[in-house]
Length: 212
Image (cartoon, rainbow, N blue to C red; front, side, top):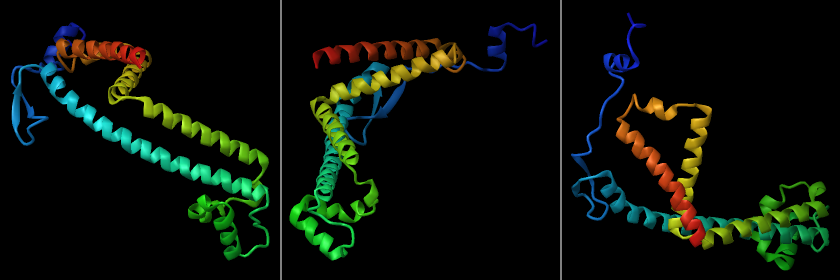
């Protein structure tokens, strides 16, 4: 009997499809905290919360830049420490720890706060190649910081939408028909809106990239 049913009959019989009404949508206001507001369309929600989301991205940018700068400061101190060890202005072998601290404080004071961590590295690994690798890492960190500093919150947001788009498209490739399967879980309108949203995200990202 099951084999005789069409796809549409199976969906109906097992209640695999449902609809979601968008005529009675309520959510907390993005501007008037604690107030519940009725929104006429999904786009109205996006319009109101987009500005709020950009504010959060601005705070996130500040936080990430601070974190990057901390990492850069530590890496710069590590490079200075390696150079001092190679130049033997800081002598590690057969030197009391107190004397090492004095040498570091005198010759490379920027490394002093990180000295305990640096001393965990094997002396045998402190080669000229190690310095070159550390310097390359330092420059890479600085480039990432400078690239982030140039981004506006809007471009950051668009960039993440781009990643979402790429991820969903990759899912569609590895699991063909994923959007078709969604039709059994949501209305065709919702699925179409998702596809439109992803296409719009791609277009917005391209536009922001050209503007930047």
